[in-house]
Image (tube, rainbow, N blue to C red; front, side, top):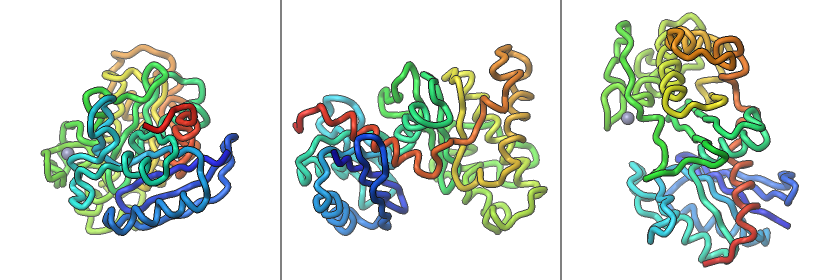
Length: 295
Ligand code: ZN
């Protein structure tokens, strides 16, 4: 059985062909341009390889309300070409195979909970910190959708008193997580990409504070058994350990769970399947879509 997997990102599309056991047989990347330019390339890639099902992890916001007439469509994205684009419907119509869709970060948390750093967990969060910040939430053995889907990247935070840019750079909110802690927020404060900065640059004290505030908020609201943090900004090795320590400090002794207080190193961790957590999650979605009829 050949299962297609699509990780649809804001800057690139990652396409994979897997077998039923999860072996990646072939993959390729395409730049994300307009739907008129990019979708025909995606469709012909999968058509030529005669996939039998397809799983999609996509950038959002995306409509994931079962029964909605626009289910699986991109909604109010700032990428204007993609606004209201019927991603799932178009792929189903063109490929005529069962398809399943979730957010890119929900696909990633699904993969990590089944096969990666949160194996065995029924409740976990996967966060990616890069050009943007997004998180997939797994709760009670399922990815969380709700009214829309979680938008952890836009949770509001308390600005650090030493931050020269306390309002952040999000065009929608003052002091939201993505506006304060994404790669472009680091670059805006320092005039340099994060990778060019020394470990002791003060911007990483701010970064630690904001990502620890995020962890505390996730612990208080979602009660995950594990938090995974990946993405380009987290490639700086020592950052994760600082975030662990600061999270415990900010919790202030209120949460008395040894999983956190005694074993924080195995509670806040790196994703194991990075950088293809999302693609593997799309494979899982595609594999599980196999039993469903095309509507
Ligand atoms: Zn925001």
